[in-house]
Length: 267
Image (tube, rainbow, N blue to C red; front, side):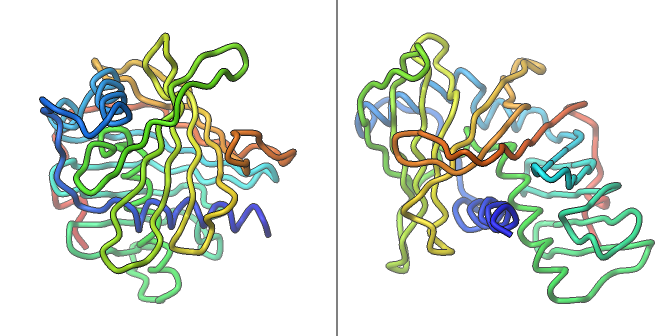
């Protein structure tokens, strides 16, 4: 049950934190050192303009919990408008009550779910789609979106972890309704200028005291550094993880510029 909760928290984090924002990349001045470090990191992986030049992406998404339950989907996104589609050939975590292929989509205005050619109107199932679509898209564009408006940066200093030296930056999101907002605490490797790991909270569901920690491994694809290998689990604010097993996320077969039609994303 705890693993299911953590998985849901991951989904809700991304749905509520960063949705449909403008992207700010050309900086001549910075709020502070933390902001500058984030900017330099984003230039290293490839900023949003460089990503958007690819027009669209298709890739294989695999998410596996320690009990072996797995989601396996073909993800398709158009970056202009943040259109998102997922075809799940395996969905032991996501909507397991449906047998066989399920398709989820977001066309820029509405979310939809299709099973065996029929559109599903069940409110609970559709609510899961409203988590999956923006969440999966956001994970793919997360670092580029760390330069979006409405973010606050705080430099926390240096830290050595497993004989690697890191610059630590805390990133929080502006609150427009007096509700608490999410926090990222990213660890930028001083040698590579990449984020090896980061902590985060999920304020919308009241998880603010104990963060989750995600570790990353990168792959260079068409001039972009993509964090294709991810693992995460519970942690504290010193980045000391719990004894729980890791949840694994893997992206593979990444292809850009596929000429995707917007009709794919329409109901």
